[in-house]
Image: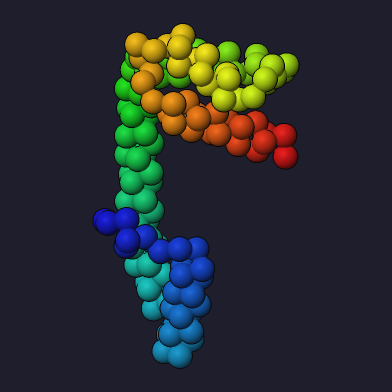
Length: 133
């Protein structure tokens, strides 16, 4: 089942209400109603199984990507710079540009682009702001 085939919650509610109305209009006997509901239950369980499989597959792919990224040399450097940035945030000396320049000098073999460290600092600043909110 493709991602686009999964229904949003409000679409499920609309579909349920539509089926309920159709069942009322058909004036089914109790046995017919139970048969129809059993069929819908089987159909829905298949949809739910597909949805669970999709979520598990996605979680597995994300975990694999995070593991690969965590082992990368640039990730190690990023974590070291983040540690130094957190310390610097407690008592900022000078402007952030000075901090970035110091990191570029210290890690000049691994990090070549100033914009990369600037982007990381923005990410970390947003991360801290979201935690404090």
